[in-house]
Image 1 (cartoon, helix red, strand yellow):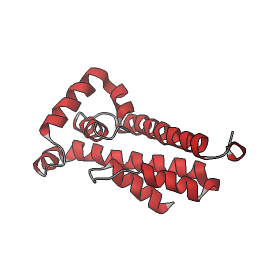
Image 2 (cartoon, helix red, strand yellow):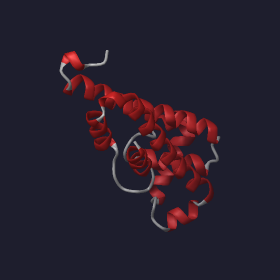
Image 3 (tube, helix red, strand yellow):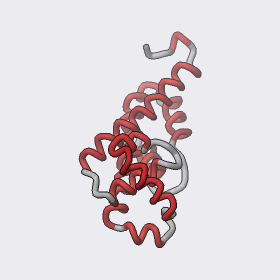
Length: 146
């Protein structure tokens, strides 16, 4: 579970990589812990996004200078965030757009507790959908959890 947490955390930060494959693997390896895996993956991914938020809030120029984010991506995400507000954070789970939008939330000094709540919901739904698909596509009917 600790490895799942850190893989999910890392995949939501500026580090390259995804967490979906390991999450599905963990569901397969530990079927009795699927709900714990769902929570741990969501929590780790949310904290990874919060790291992006902190970078945006305090280290914007440094992150751009080091090419963690391209100015074009930040401008695009800023425009989107200003137009749609907190609803844009519901897209924080998306692979390409999610990181810049969480970074921009920090730049724009969006409320950190609202940020955490919205992003956690988005990440939880994402992993929940993955879990649902795994259970209903790969498992025989007599092993499904409904």
